[in-house]
Length: 469
Image (tube, rainbow, N blue to C red):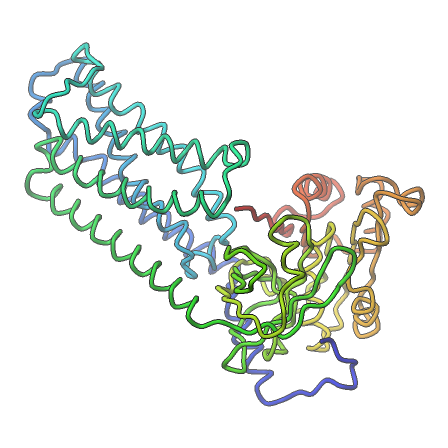
């Protein structure tokens, strides 16, 4: 619930909450330094792995010369790259907060998908280049070649994972079914990788390569166990639904209270994964922005548009139902900027929610900086929490809000999209050194982010929030 300015009570914990929230989003300098270190560590591991076929030559190398030997070496290098990247894949999907604060979880998930395609390509080329020098691509179905047959099964599994992940929507695979199958396949592939690597080549039969393989598999198992335990811990510590209220057309406010009495610390603009335990809602996990202010830690609020089968079922949730929350995640927050930097916020539809959290926080903190909010909706009926934004305008003297509509009678005066001409007019009074936050449909974000540099805004100060599962 949003109270009027006169109802705000500054308690002794508010400053503490603010300090903890601010620590969640690191500065750009810190993120850059730590990001470089993470990349360097991975490159060192990769370099060590690809050196194995040269430093610890297998017996198959002894009888290869010239181009045949080069081809075999390249094939083995690609196999090593595929194996290392396959094990590292778990880092990008394990929701490790350290990595989230550096790269952002949405970026980690996109990188995870890109690496999946890279792994599939390397895994496919690996046997071709290994067996081509021997003028054969057919593995004999005999006991002697069982490690190679394990590798073939591993390759097919990797290709299946890459294809189903890339074309999940086209294949119409339900997300929960795909995720469960993907997780089981990851365990099978890792086990198959260990068996294949330790038995297919005598390079890994002893010494450093064998020890490194055991260590790599062991660390993967520990990380997977931690990830499983973390998600189990989240599920057995549920929050309670306090209210489900209309927030606009086909939109609801989901208010949640933690059993401990205080929510976890989070920065305005971050998101969390929620799983609702209610008779009318499937037990699926979905990410949503936390729309409330960190200054009010006794309740969390999510503003959700009912645009699919699962989200529409949220309307049946009742107060008292349980909800598991895993968060916070993300780096889309004005905490990334200087405390007095001018802000430009450009939202499309329900993409307003991270901006709502930031504005609520700034209102609670008496932040009077200059803020320009451009909010694009299809029609006036699609605007959510009208009274809340009116109140924010009264509490934030530096806020200037522009509503933009793409359909209906209102579109005749505003235009059908946020193009260069419209943005130039709406941002006429905004400083070009302002930090710009963009959230909304993919096409809208891409178009706006492309236009802004031409209007004088810096690439380095344009932030977008893209998230899809």
